[in-house]
Length: 104
Image 1: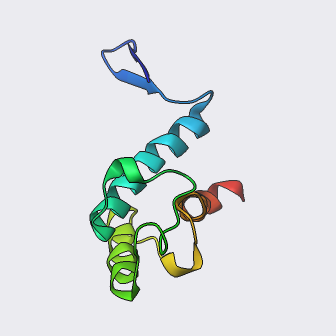
Image 2 (image 1 turned 45 degrees about the vertical axis):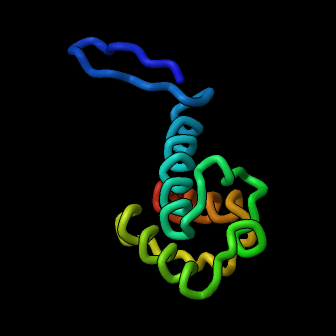
Image 3 (image 1 turned 135 degrees about the vertical axis):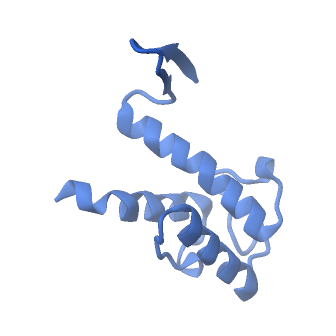
């Protein structure tokens, strides 16, 4: 990540080629922490290809914890983790839901 000080003393962090990619990458970091917490996994275990059920052992109770934490962290966002087989699929669903109003 690249960090610099903007005029007026505000810090600016760039974690992608543009602002949208930076926001997506920050959301990915947050979502990884949420998944790790809900499914009692190590952050290092979670990569795009990680399968929530097979690799992290998500059962119905884990899916419910994950759904509730996502709603709590992402301003009431409702997603169904059992419809997303991988971390990448879950991230895309969260990103699309979070930004669907901006595309209109």
